[in-house]
Image 1 (cartoon, rainbow, N blue to C red):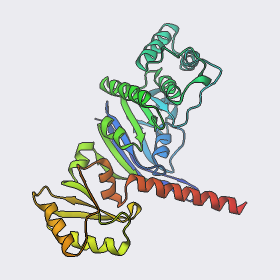
Image 2: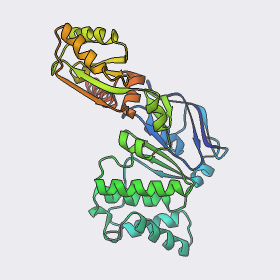
Image 3: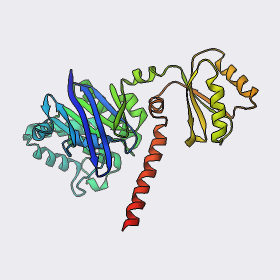
Length: 338
């Protein structure tokens, strides 16, 4: 049963359209991943679901409650872990969780029981009584996550919770999220880490430029691509003309499809190869006939990055670089206007 229904969400900031008629359904007790590059609209969607901002248009229902009309009621159902961590440096971790419990009006007996359980689950016993100002990024994130779980929310919403974390903290958080999901909690996880979504999510939506470009289970999305993913280079740094010529050769070979020229990676060629025994041998013969030698050739099973590449014509890394460039141009434009 769909526990969360997002219908036609749109949101703009000045001239920037962050979300464009976005719709998603999330079932009860699932871990739902929202995957996309920085600037795709993930954080805007998360902030709407956390009742921090309102959309320009569209609707959100959680447990059949209209989020926009009943934000106070929704806040009782959700736990929210923001991308940016803000902890009081003077308090210890235990004092901070105690204070947070009082804000939720949790009675004394339940309060200490829940705090101690979360300390154990997130392996914080060795440092929980130190001041937060002494904590590493991974420690701060674990405290932040514990604070979002004290009131036993029905829905946990996380915005890039493992960015920049050490492996130990990331694995501890991953295990807790799996345990919470297995115990019936609905979890929404925003991330640009492919492995995180692939390993944790029951279902996911891939977002690009404010739109959902693909959704399903990780296995469904990868299986739809079919064949192996191949990246071909005839030299370390090629050029557009050479890449176009190679692309024409590839398109003439039966069993090769979905050919994309990747300019950001030195005009390498990405394509899908059917699982034919002699296909790559045929490829080498055709390239040699046209006086091209293979500089490098890599072959792999489909990944979520391949799903993104197929839908947009660029990898997630390329999209990150592109968005970073746009942000830099906007900064330069604002500075020049001052």
